[in-house]
Amino acid sequence: MKKTAAWLAKYALEQVGVEYTFGIPGVHNTELYDELNNSDLITPYLVMHEGHGGFMADAISRTTDAIGAMVIVPAAGVTHAASGIAEAYLDGIPMLVISGGIRNDSKFNYQLHQLDQLKLVEGITKAAFRVDTHEQVIDTIYKAYNIAISGEPGPVFVEIPVNLQLDKAQITEIKPYQPAEQQPLTTKTIAQIKAAAQLLAEADNPVIFAGWGALKASAALVSIAEQIGAAVSTTLQGISAFPANHPLHAGFSFGPAAAPAAQNAFAKADCVLAIGTRFAEIATGSFGGTLPENLIHIDINPDVFDCNFNTKLAITGDATQVCAQLSEELEKFDSLSSQNNSALSAQLAQDKQAHRQDWYNHDSKARVNPALYFDELRKQLSDDGFVVVDDGNHTFLTAELMPIHNARGFISPTDFNCMGYAVPAAIATKLAAPDKEVVAVVGDGAFMMTCMELATAVANNIGCIIGVFNDGELSQISQAQQIPYNRKTCTVLPQTKLQGIATATGAEYIRIQGNDDIKAGISKARTLSANNKPVILDINIDYSKPTSFTQGIVKTNLKRMPLPTKMRLVGRAIYRKITD
Image (cartoon, rainbow, N blue to C red; front, side, top):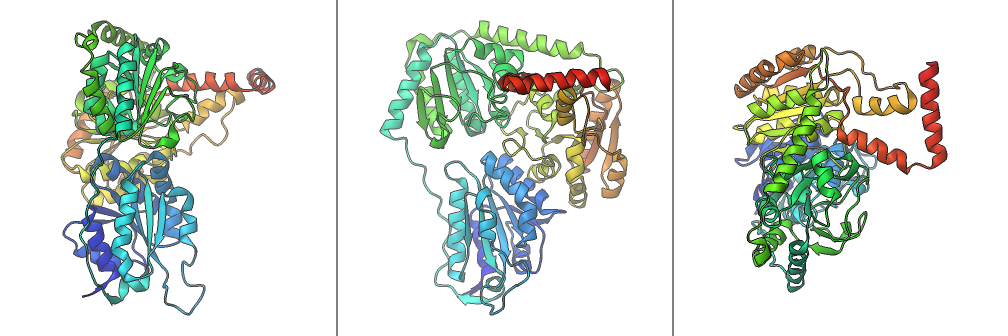
């Protein structure tokens, strides 16, 4: 049979379960777009910028069982998409990036878009392939998909030359995709799990720290926490791995950057079970916390062990399998059969309430108190709704003050930490889950980077809510500047009327001016979004009270500085405060 590479690529993408692609057509991929338009299983979406498309593909992988995919033009399409690809790479998110390529049968040099794309993406992908013949197309996409979803997931890049897309060639076989079977736990791993169960059963004050890798093990994680009587804290990316309405939930992070419930739980821990985390900078509050000698670390990527914290027991494996087995092993300990977690639950609840009361006592004057906003959002938002955040001060306010009840209910750019993520990611999340509520929380600076993607939402009747924390500054950095410099350099934003952006894109607009407007503003936004209308919810936020995270990392980093640097910074701050 004779087929074009465009047809073969479409077939392979259908086989691996791709449901949406994001990108922009150009001369090197129009044939592939035409084939995608013929597909009954895949819907291609035009985006305003390939970087936005990368964030959208990323969100599909985070919030659904399908893999996010991009179809882009070569050269500029790749460099534009790089931020979205790199976010997926550092956060461990699977993605397929299908790019057009220059002709590989031409006698001419200096073709349009001619550059070495494989070299370009080398540092931000798990693997990159260039297809040379029609026969390679299907096998290459299957291989790319397997690499993207195996081990620690990540993006994989495939370049298909334009002449192969256009021309037909004889194909000997068109193979359906056969998913790899999950391998059972090895004898060695089961022995390690038994040893972990022993350590946890013997601990007086065990604590659990869960990351993104624990997401699909959420049910087993709840069981383990209840079996051993452990408070559970999470990384930023792993916030939804453990339900915040569970009495053993402690919060986000540990050490000086954590809120009191998590900070106190870890302070007396004699054994920590860490699942699906790399102990990266944000997760650990700038590496500010300490952990006990008995650290059990479970992760699918063995390279993460002993990088920042020494482990007593390192278990390589899929968290879903390992945690299920660990829960079974813990059932064998009679000492745990009558575990009473009431005292621990009461202490966690007390710490949380005291912390929240501290926020209520804060006078936000004419602006919106973040705690009151998140109280009302949590009250109105359905448990299966999604909260999508960006990078900025609002990120840690959300992590600290917005309880997430369902797995996958919270997504955030984390280790790459790219501003501009939330608007496109919220649109894609709502696209894939039209019957569920999606609310973004994004700072005004990050919003301005990708806000025009709302035109895509309007064009496709995607009713998400984009809650903009509007204070006129890049607040996370401006606050960091204020203490040592007593000035704000390039962090005060030009005044922009967000209502004008709503008019330009066709989105709806609501303003929350003060605390009295919160309830009605959120309610109206939910009504509009339920009618498939995207909404800009402009929130006059008060950022004057710093989060526990911000206070913690400032102390940690200041403490870590050499004395001369520390004295110089403190002296300069005092001098400028007096003289400016």
